[in-house]
Length: 92
Image 1 (cartoon, rainbow, N blue to C red):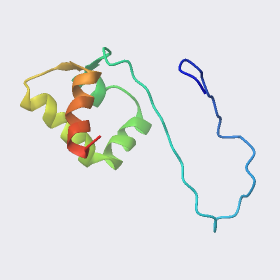
Image 2 (image 1 turned 45 degrees about the horizontal axis):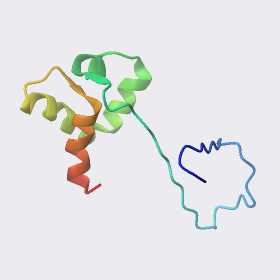
Image 3 (image 1 turned 90 degrees about the horizontal axis):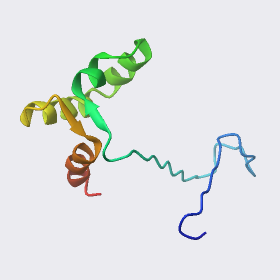
Image 4 (image 1 turned 30 degrees about the vertical axis):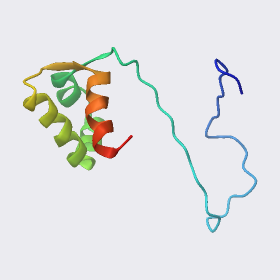
């Protein structure tokens, strides 16, 4: 592949094996525009039951995110600033 090329793989790609005894490694890559504004109230209060369940199942991470907003006295932040804060913590 060269810079600018795009590789798309879907979850329904045929696999050589389907046994659960085979050790596998998966890579999930996600992208977000760093200049996207994240609104604290929308992040924590908008959405339905599925989102509320997701937040409650990941309470430690979302508590850290909430603390980031509180610590910096913010109601919104750019994605890149939030990601920078947490990337430094996990050594990315």
